[in-house]
Length: 329
Image (tube, rainbow, N blue to C red):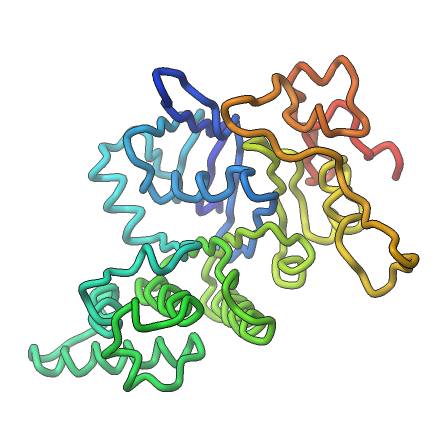
């Protein structure tokens, strides 16, 4: 059963009286216990999509979808309050910028305790208080923070960005969510700490059957942990399939470019030789190309690309391109 089932989700930004289509007809389905990666360059719309799922976009953003289901419930038919009640109970998100998400007026211990699922505690109020403190300390240990005595009494501004990121992860796990959305959860960490967090996410997925949507711009890094991948470019869906399918046979030219630009130990690169890259940069929202947004940078672009391509599926491997590489395999 699909935990989350979204079809043709579009997100518009109202700016100076003009509507800008930031996310264009993106579909995403996440099964129970699935570990899915969402990949794309900065500016691809990954974070906006995640924020739309948990409902934290402000009034300047308008969200449309043909289908937006959570465990079979049509969220679009519910009121904002009913939708918020379901999502805040079952979905948690780790944001990119922890310093701006943590409450500067409360210490870390209080913030973690506030996020805990209160139904797990019992007894008198002093017993529940002790249980909450113990649970908060266990969560800090789980995310790799051993010196809990100092951290629980600290305020966000007294900690490094890396420590704040770990605290954000602990707060997200405190809710015991069915779906955890991790938006660049290790961006401010060193390589060894990154591996520890990825192992934690993998263990939660395997042992607790927690579904995880891991968002990153580094395809190679998250491929070791995810079962399935979805690739976005400039607010559009380009390719999706199992991680093995996408790595072995990337159909879309953008996915292939991401693969080719990744340094690999088994690839011989000549002295001063440049890595393979797509020319140009990702377009800004105010000047989006019509049709396929990769068109101005795409090596396969032709006149037909001014029309947005339809999604085609080949044994579960989906691609949205008029001239994909699928014929090469």
